[in-house]
Image (cartoon, rainbow, N blue to C red; front, side, top):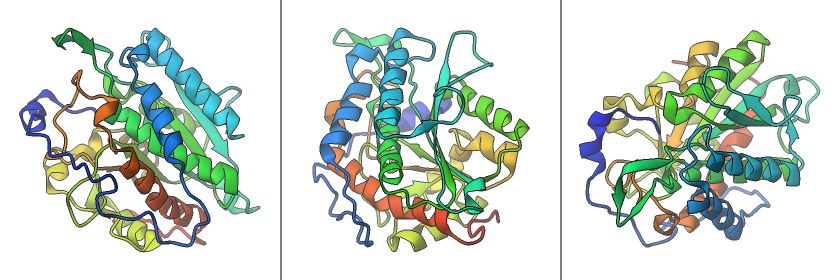
Length: 321
């Protein structure tokens, strides 16, 4: 997540990460005949946050490896490229950088012409000047290999089960850490092509659970009724309001925002980093070993019915306030 530097003192609070792997929560109780494989979560998260990728800085050799991995993940799950290839090259960055974009076509003859976007940024900040014990690689396990991993599992569900009436655009964004460059680029491009966007759900920093009555918070809580509808679709307290996200204007800090600006539709982010449960933001210690993969598996299973509700509602149930 891209935040301004004045947030850093708040981000260095003592880590209160729970070792209870599913934080006392079971996977979704909705009647979905589907289980996310925890080993898949581990494999994707571990690779994307490995030293081999050198922090996935936009335009780097490391993020190129991440892009190939994500392209292969889409291919293996028979998710087709939305454009001629999976790579959507950014026109607003000085190095070669690209979003990875796939599409899962809807199964309804009319509704398939409308889209739900699910997205997560796969870039991070690369190497940093303040090394810790000789380690200068900001691996970005929580930010945002975790969101990328959870979103990929949601995409795999729909690719396998084909239960979506509306079409789903699956987007791994680059350039988020440079100023939301990937999402600004793609939102403007799609708007120019008269893309029929219903809503957009973005996945950000989901690697550790919160100790609250809801599983995650949603940015821009009051912008729409998305939180209400998500909880209705999941029959759980999947999302709630976190006051600090409003204080720090996190609605404008991730890849949901350009789609809100361009399309004027509900476009919001779900997140479990709450400024109290994790200490390592843009830090070399944001590593795989601190991530709670059982929590991530459970959250993916919990949020799938929400995306299912978005894709299958007869009308536009999610609306701006």
